[in-house]
Image 1 (spheres, rainbow, N blue to C red):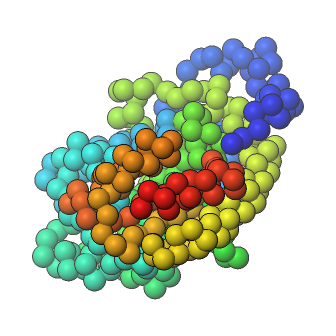
Image 2: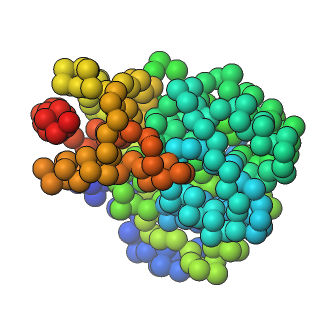
Length: 352
């Protein structure tokens, strides 16, 4: 969680609320979002994620879900075929259905989305778009391997579909080399890149964004203005000032160190308490482990039993496009101290 007391004492924030700035920020701003924030995000994407983008190619939204909603309504026509990862993020499927998409699930294995399955669908039907979470696939946390990334980009170019890349927690990768987003590779096919600052700062700070060609960004901004004239210009300016002062980057480094420790401790406790009961791969990044049970379990019932004992988990059958059969749990570690995580896994061990 971001250090709010440190934020409030930041010289940059004081400048935001000076008399002159206050009146400027209280007026209308660009429908694309706060200009200084877009400039700072453009710099971040160019310097740290390999995406050469300009400020007018970025639309600020109230979180990544809004970015996906505007992307779907701007891109998809009723009846368009959209490929999704299975298992995957059910709220994203709801957004795509709302736009009229015909969804086709693509299996995910231990190396990410299955490229052969994508190509098989493309050979049979016209595909409009593919939604993917290649950095840390949701919910399995797997990082899409380099050869599959390049193959997916080639398929996009060959069959002319748009890749919608949801890079929801890019900063939290624990390897020595952080994979670059798909959007960093020039391949001749369109990629719409969605990300967020909410996981980095705090869930209540609803700042997401989408990047893409200027014509698409303008269309999405026009659509956004129908339901939301502009975002929170004061908040966006404050975050922009913090980015410009290097405060967000410092926080990201501190948070990464904390999460790296919790990532390692969770692995240790899984080995200590559940080694004989579950199978899992140590994720390269992200804020959770995806554990699969060696014996068949009633996941909804297990979820209910854990919740009754004070352990908050999600029924992972909701992540399956078919609605069942995953026989797995997603164990988040970001908000738990080492003793808390140990207690959670002890409760799980006793419940099995």
